[in-house]
Image 1 (tube, helix red, strand yellow):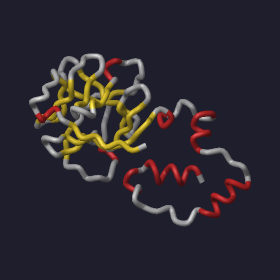
Image 2: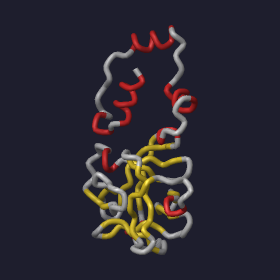
Image 3: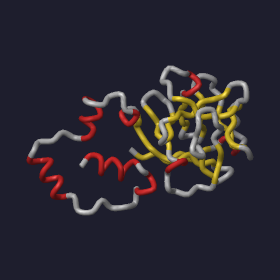
Length: 177
């Protein structure tokens, strides 16, 4: 049962598909005193990336009206802006307890300090290059260790000194638990 529920919840292309009537499965779960999937993650599979994610959502540039897209993401590839399609996948991100932003392929947003661009990297909670926070009041995506912000441009995402007068720095991030 857990595999079915997780598959439906996590594979974003199927998020609007109903699993149907699962009341009998719930009755069996209650009768057998089964533990929750959260219990399984915390006690049996604590190293799972799902254990670290607080919220999932999309990251949309207010100026470009496009979404951050990993384009299938390979390590070191730059994130781009593409038309928002609302189906998750390459445009679905998780925000973790360790302030990392994770793709569904378990890669993290990181900065390439030489290029000042946002690229994908193997997730490493200890890497300052991967720490982010969202300033909801000003709509800024801030790189924690540098204090700089993500800026949308024609070719993708760059990291630069935050500028509250430039709407290319403003992001609409919709997160759901």
